[in-house]
Length: 193
Image (cartoon, rainbow, N blue to C red; front, side, top):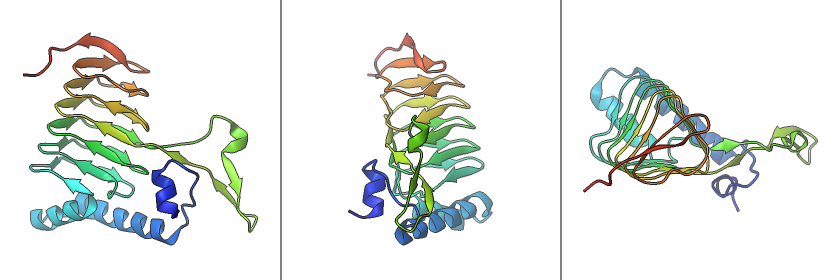
């Protein structure tokens, strides 16, 4: 199993792996181009190279951050506002008509709650931070409010509103509004027709 396959499987992986380092370098380069390029065609080319999949009419409004980029798949009519960050150490998938307000963060990586298991030792004696990853998926017709945090392993259903400032640590069902820390269902919504 490659280090990249271990990463996507949620296993302990070595981030020094040359393939992962190449992917990280490519992601940094493309994100920088997206955030600084003033030529719309060159910016669009960088967007198309960064993401694994993009649907039609993607809008990235303002500064954007990602680690790999290639782990992110976006549906049609996705709007990502300024200062959003995708810590895509695993797959992040957004459905169609997803609106993400400013300062929203998606974090796929996590560390052990047991402090004695957060660092490992390689055969050469060097120490490393142990990280595990889980994917994040968001359905269609979702509005994620400002300053929201979504943690790895979470699935947000269809026709959902995530209130500003929420921290989403568990799955969210379809047709509801969630809010709070941790996020909980605060109102049901009528299903879309």
